[in-house]
Image (cartoon, rainbow over all chains, first blue to last red; front, side):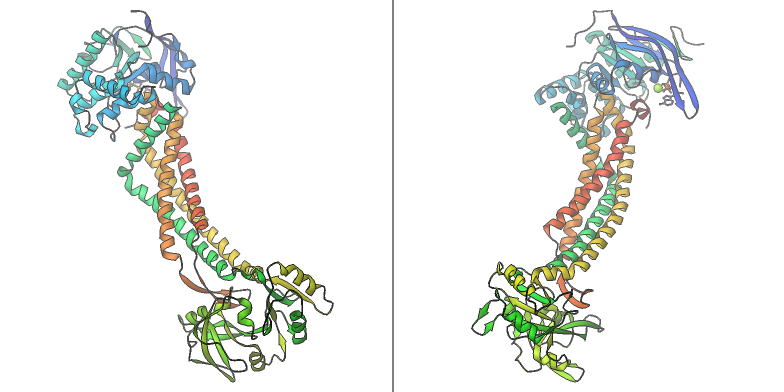
Amino acid sequence: MNEQPQKNGVLVDVDGVEKVFHRGSEDIHVLSDLHLKVPQGEFLALMGPSGSGKSTLLNLIGGLDRPTRGSVSIAGEHVNELSDRQLAAWRARHIGFVFQLYNLLPVLTAERNVELPLLLTHLSKAERKQHVATALGVVGLSHRTKHHPRQLSGGEQQRVGIARAIVTDPTLLLCDEPTGDLDRKAGDEILDLLQALNRQHGKTIIMVTHDPHASARAGRTVYLNKGQLSDEPVK
Amino acid sequence: MLNWLNQVFCVTLFNLRTIPERKGAVTAAAVGIAGVVAVFVGVLSIAAGFRAAMSVKGARDVAIVLRSGADTEMTSGLSREETRLVADTPGVARNADGPLLSAELFVIINLPKRATGTDANVPFRGVEKAGLAVRGDIKIVKGRRFEPGKNEVIVGTGAARAFAGVDVGETIRLGQNVWQVVGQFAGGGGSAESELWTDAVVLQGAYGRGDSFQSVYARLTSARAFDEFKRALTSNPRLKVKVERQGDFLAEQSSMLTTFIENFGVFIAAMMALGALFGALNTMYSGIAARTREIATLRALGFGAGPVVISVMLESLALALVGGTVGALAAYLAFDGYKAATINWQTFSQIAFAFAVTPELLVSAILWAVTIGLIGGLFPAIRAARMPIAAALREL
Ligand SMILES: Nc1ncnc2c1ncn2[C@@H]1O[C@H](COP(=O)(O)OP(=O)(O)OP(=O)(O)O)[C@@H](O)[C@H]1O
Ligand SMILES: [Mg+2]
């Protein structure tokens, strides 16, 4: 396993981050002087109105985008100082993404989808197979390994998505509305799974959601509004 | 490195597997490339076949003598006296009947084409007794040789195929004269098979050429004797002639036409290639647009930009190779050995030849396809790699 900062040390440190998008001649200020610290082992929910910049913040933490100003450091690594190539390798090692629309590759079977991040490691074929089996076991899909995404329900696809996110045992799990496209029952199963990953496997999770029912499962909830975070929902 | 190859392999496999979802566009692009290759091979096989028809194998020991300053037999002229001097030059092979040498002349006659019934120019050549032996590779395939002193002709197989009324046993009426077709011959190199041959003396009489000739064909004792033979002739103060090996002469005779056909072929292929290139670009661009979210997902998981570029290029290359191979194969089946006749504008006579799809031609055609594939993949690949991941993930 990766060396991890000691329990309850700060894993994610977002410091004075500003994000401005340019659309034509217009500047869109999405985040301004935003601060966020997430301790190791926390399950954090991130809420806020649509368009408030939740996905943007998650992408900055996951190294998919760079802040206009300020810094993002994960486990002591200043992510915005890495080159594109280093950043890709860093993502492969440290981040597991779970997407609202699962983002599975339709042409690959469940087990091939889960195997994808392992192709970026030095694991042998046999070791990869082992890891894939473990991850699919954790999400309870050991019996559907050979199925293609279109043969699976939404909830099952999202479980494959979670298996893919955890198969490399990443430092941090980032979920962007993981239950946003699922019905209550399937959503609850996904939340059970995330909760178990956090409680039993010690995974640090940041989850964007619109659903108070989902954020209730998290250890802490923060609210994003007008580019800033607060601990209280906006009235 | 292994890791990197793994990424390339995986992304390429993923790309190729999505082809069935885009078969319309992919097929159109491949067909475009196949078309380019087919046209390229088709047109250039004409030039290759033409060149093959014009250059004779083993003719390095046959020399042709013309008046100096003449580029073709038509513009040349030699007296009997001069041809005798050539015959006495060292280096000329001999047999029991004397020197292996033929003083020749030709006239252009009109014969109706089999295909259209319209008249076309045909060379009618007068050769001396040794004329057939000089070339070495001439075979009478039907009938017999003409007899000296008689109005008898033998017809080249190409001419027999292209023109009406020249089968063995038929007679040809030309002006005051009637000629009996007594045989058909093959070989002779160059345009010989597209000609009619008779006795030189008879032809001189029929066309009022007095005792003059236009060229001398001489078999040399060996290919190496050429330099000596040439030196002896050009340094003879009583002669003003130029000497060439027959193979070189024939290749030169056809250079204008082969070059034209080649340029024309390359031009047409280039125009079509431009079209096919846009087809390939379009297919690859839309293929990538359709896969934006998948590619962004792979990048989010940590796949590098390099493997994305390489795999898009590989996909485009695969498409081009399939198209190119199909096109080359189709051209080969359609054109190789296809018999045709055309005008050689340097002698204004009909040349019969067969299209030749040579291995070199196929290789360069595939290279064209590969080039189209690489360029067609490059820009879309760069776009795919440059795509900002966060923005691409927002797309549905
Ligand atoms: N790549 C981009 N270019 C321009 N504008 C962008 C880009 N990404 C996001 N934005 C803008 O930034 C703002 C925040 O977008 P973001 O997706 O982070 O919101 P969100 O809180 O996740 O919304 P939702 O709840 O609808 O998912 C929006 O106004 C959006 O239009
Ligand atoms: Mg969002």
